Length: 243
Length: 243
Image 1 (cartoon, rainbow over the protein chains, first blue to last red):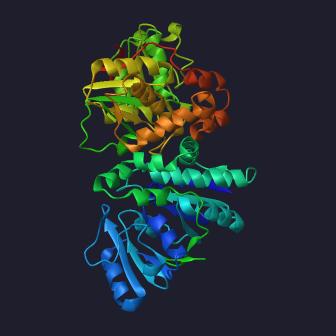
Image 2 (image 1 turned 120 degrees about the vertical axis):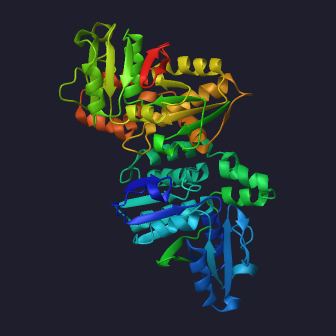
């Protein structure tokens, strides 16, 4: 299995046709998706466009839906929740469909929605995703970071490295790094693996959340490695379920 | 001093106005520039375009010029030398002007030619460049990698991290990482600093050179840390001297 990592969706070559893709947005979309599905949400439906999100949500029973979203780390007018993994408790989300749009994460999902096996990962479900990828035996898995407004992000690279490192560890003879981005991400993980929360707090976007205030629980949640068994999996375009 | 790193010139924001820039192309343009100037070349004049290079070289006395260049790691028709740091011996280069164009490195130089203090760095002159940057006290230094055909490169990130790490070490209170790319590059350096040659050989472009064959001396040369005191400095647009 070849393992690539692309810092942002735009860096993935147009002609690349991986048979599996794993989208990462550590702060905080894919962490929130993992926790929401773990806590019993029926599905998470991701939208790059807010207009499309509102139109789709309007078709859904009001008592079985939640609107989640943020732009620039702030909640959106008329939405039920922002982008915090701490807020998607069982009481809030069980049995509901979450209509979600975030600054970067859902745009990354949109870019790879045609890939046959599409998962999302964050640090809390890193091990579960690694096991699922290996069980499916794709020939090429592309890990796709969300970045920040088109630029490299430290926290997505950390999680990409955590996942890549684990895949190479579990399948040392069959798997290899297919690009320099993956090799560097694995080195990044090896440097910070004893304290991933410190890495998230060092990252530019972590600093931004710290300035907004009151995000300690979010950092703890986003940095908690291998705590959830859920594997968010695309079951139809844009719709993720715990599969 | 703020320290940024951009993986490739195109990732440097158009509106960023650093007062210093350090261009890196470890395999092999900026390693070759350092060695050529160390070995007595009068200057290195860098060109993004081969046509411009040939026109400028034609104006220069034939016995005081050398044409250096490669595309895809291979030497160019009608050129005197390729892009190997091993070839720029004192016998070859002393007193001569080197007209140079390479796949990625000289294009990066072209992108930042307006920056007031423009240096090039590689692993062999890492310490000398760090000392020079600190002596000049810029408020913002942008380290610019050359990458490979517009994409991230492991070896440029390693050297960017080596330089960033040293700047932060020499000036821990006055200097800080200004973007996630620099933080990640420093982590990369910390992971590989005991064996930088292994990192160069792991990189995609290192693998490409290994497939071309006969590059062991190049790898040793490009990985040799802090061996040269030379600081290639732009003295007029596109012209670098040991200053």
